[in-house]
Image (cartoon, rainbow, N blue to C red; front, side):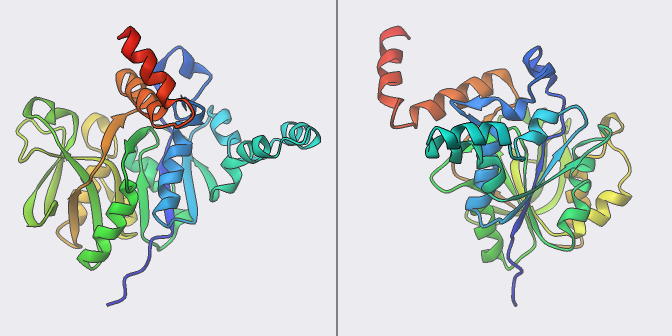
Length: 288
């Protein structure tokens, strides 16, 4: 059986980022830097490394700086070109050149499932990678590429990335109920968002590879917790009708939508940079 390759990604980035006030009043949290590269740039780079050629960014009204990252800045580019700063010019154009990026808006905050649904027209009838716009994983093989590879080995269907969490933390996540079918792999029966009694220690985080059938389910889904549409509820409804697997990916995850998670991601990213990593390690040894 021929499996349709995954060539498009969806990046939900419509949240208000209230945990980062006051800076997020004017700077979308997805543009907060990991050293000098915005969080969303890292996320899109992960999708591109997994083979995606198109990226749909789901933004929101009022996040003009985020939308502008994917458009040209003629004044800046003219200045850099005139000064012969070719390397800086390439960096200034990263947002428009790393992939074919389409920006759509979630007009009202109706939940993360609704944000994914907003990408339906741009994605069409194609499987797609979905990566949350404020989640970072540092790994040898990007998580999206791990999930795409798992999907190919499983013969298609949808695959969600999972990590193991402590029982006391399970109420913060969508938790997988299912059966092991191979190394680091489970066939999903259902996913329960923020359960009172978790069925496992497997939390769905960071990314999915999803079949386009998820859009029909999202379009007809009844609101769940807090009156919102949750992607985990839609994936749970998909599972009885189409293969859904969970894959425990390799890598160190940072929730960059959380202050402590963001600082950890910043430090880890800085340590990985060869031009500043050694200097930073020495500073940490002297001061921490």
